[in-house]
Length: 227
Ligand SMILES: O=c1ccn([C@@H]2O[C@H](COP(=O)(O)O)[C@@H](O)[C@H]2O)c(=O)[nH]1
Image (cartoon, rainbow, N blue to C red; front, side, top):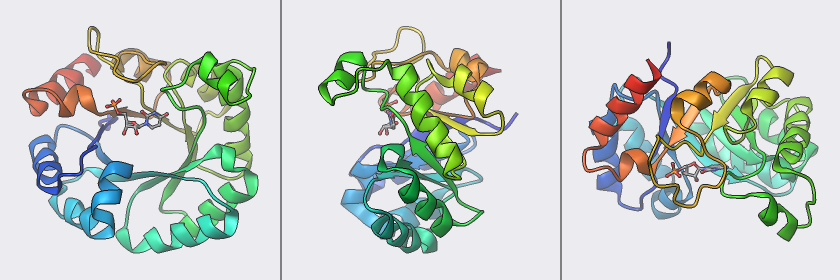
């Protein structure tokens, strides 16, 4: 089995990011860089992390969300970085997602963020959505699929049903918490094995690994729980 664990390296400290990447080399399937790292170090930082990678895949999680023309240009600007996976917000709509995938080409997987795993139903109500998270994820997953994306980002609670509706989709699943781990700001979460069994393609795990006293040991324990 390909290692499904992508570690979220959320830091503004470039040396720490490189150090984590080296410590975790061979223990995870991919490295995810997000907004904190990007805003601090941009393309040069991504290139530096890339140079520290072994066989791990690189996921740049910028959650693009703008008009189609702007998102197309943003994705074109990312092409020289050679990342394997990118995110856009599915709520940006069909035309925006089509533009993103068209600009990314076949070698870069583009996935649509549905409902953030930090949100539960009351948070959806706050932004005018009276449907359940499950229903809103289903709606945005269908939109992502018909717009030509490769898959979606959703919580482990929705992945089983979404996988049934999109068997060859890429399901990127954050909100992963080993038994007993702190939830932090995650509201729709599950342990790694349960999420994988439910149909996740990629398990995004940040703090349970990166904040551990020994990140490599934490990653090894998670890998063992999946074996
Ligand atoms: O719905 C979403 C989309 C993205 N994320 C990102 O995943 C990681 C999770 O980190 P943890 O430390 O394991 O909570 C983080 O980079 C988020 O930006 C998400 O959590 N939920």
